[in-house]
Each structure stands twice: as C-alpha cells, then as structure tokens.
Image (cartoon, rainbow, N blue to C red; front, side):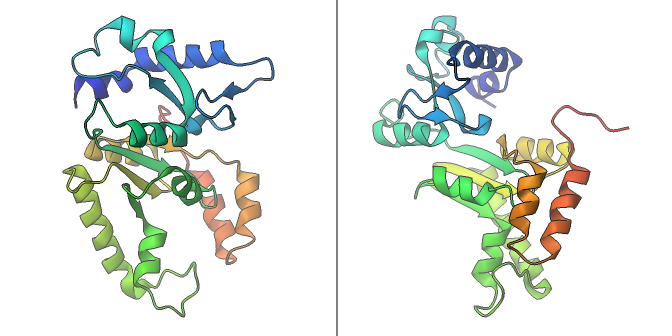
Length: 234
C-alpha cells in the first residue's frame, strides 16, 4: 500500500472529511456538489476531492492534504468525469478498486452503471450469469449447471484486479458481503475501498416484489446476517 493510499484509509483523513462535510452543510441540511451544483443525496455519492492532487511527494504536506481550501465536495460521478477529462498530473490515474456492497435490491448495479465509464472493469455475478446462461432463461435465473463456470470467471477477474492486470481505470466488485470479515478480507486482497449502498429494508422488500418470490427471502436473509464495519460478534 502506498503512502497516499494509507492516508485515504487513515482515521486522520476520515475525521477531517467528516468535519468538513458537517461544516459545509447548508441550512437545508444538504451538501451541494461543487462541480454540478446539485445536492449530494447519498453518503456513498460524496467524494472529498483534492484540487491539487495528492501524491506520494506531497501527502505529508498538511497544507495540501488537510487544507480545507484544497478540498471540494463533489459527486462520485462528477469526480470520475473530472479525472477522465483532465487526466491525472498529465498521466494516467492510478487504478482504483471499489467493493460495492449492500442488500439485494439495494440498487448496487444501478449505481455502478451510473458512475462507471467504458474504461472501468465491473465484476457482478448477476451479469456473469446473464452472459453464459441460455437466452430463454428468466432474467434472474442462476442455473446450477453453470455455477462453477460463473465463479471460475469471477475468480479470474478478481485475480486480474489483484495484480492490476489490464488497462482499466476503476474496478467495481459488486456483491452482498453482509459479513464484515468477508468485506475486510476482500479489501485487503484487492487493496480496495468499500462503498455501502445503504438502502433501507422496506425499500428493498418493495423492489423485491417485482422479482421472483424468493427475492423477499434473499433480502430478509441479508439483513439478518449484516454486520456493520467495526462491529464485533460474540
């Protein structure tokens, strides 16, 4: 892990980021994106962006790393657009990996579709099943006959991400990951950050009604297993 990556995972940065968010909230309780001007409605959609890019050379300079005047609060999508348009210090940006997790029907795939670009790599079990199953199968069907093949493809892609194989820019690994230990292991394996699509149970159950009947059980099962970050089970 580089010094820059370690900084973004540190308690120092997280505390500074949360303080900045609280300070910049408007009277209506929102943070407005400093690129597009629209309100940032979800926590996972908010990025604290360094106007002077943080590098290995300047990460220890508090006047850059922890200077409020050097930080913009922007949408995740706006952040991606900014970097793809202007580049990264005139060079290609470092490859980043995001584990996008949450309950079934939370909108994980929809969110990734909204923020990703053609230069990104997406690993989604549902989409892998769709790529290999018969065309006459139900859109949510996961035939057991091809399960091993689907997971073999997924594992190959995860290995590619781990070694940063290929020229993709961002990689998004989509999954339920209700157990904190599983998420932490995946983060360590891929040197990744996690993004929690924290859609309430009631909304997930409502969306599940539009899918086969077993999806309600999937939603309830996820919420019964979910362990938030930092929580220890006994």
